[in-house]
Length: 256
Ligand code: IPD
Image (cartoon, rainbow, N blue to C red; front, side, top):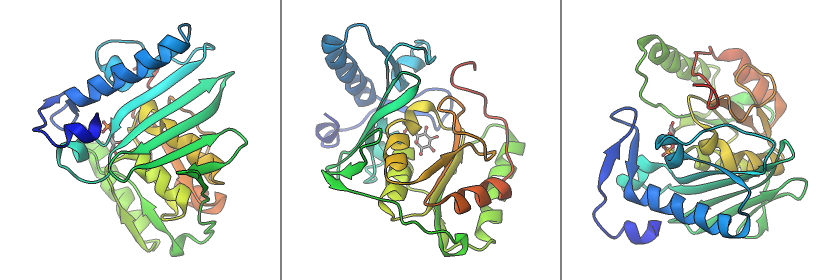
């Protein structure tokens, strides 16, 4: 559906801000995924980006839950910028059970199941293992910030990381691609404040199973609903990023 939509004119609508985009394709893909899963698992719960935008709750309970981002990188999709991913996570028994991230244009399917490793189109993948931050390529995203102080902090953080120094900073425009690039060893770290559980969904499973480290921006344990994360090829790099960057308040997915 996503690839077919790319052949036609894409009409974009706005959600919470002028840069928070949604298209008919995001909505249709999410409906298709949810209805297909529901046929097989009628009692399961769902947290989908577009369902939440339409007023559905965004709360993780003890019930088996599927977290879905139909097009992670909607701006990329609208701009025909190559990286757009479909992102699915299955959460049950208070833990991440498996994740699937599909790069629609590249036709690459990343999969990971707890304790069973991470794969791209069936081939095992693993993080670079880099321990030295000055030898690393770091990913982050530069989203629009309504609060000028947050904006300043976001830019200051980029400067701080660049002047460590690191090899560079990149922004591909999709949380899922960032996480898969670290999982494959093409980049060494990714940090972000202000994303959502559906952006981090499948990628959290993939990067963990690829041997990566995932933590909260404060250096504490990763929390899927916290809207912030650091992932890295090693604990040393993740902890150094946590130490260097300044936090700002982004709220939570399950309370704000
Ligand atoms: C977006 C992407 C992007 C991030 C934004 C997200 P969406 O997801 O993950 O990298 O900077 O914060 O909203 O809206 O295209 O699914």
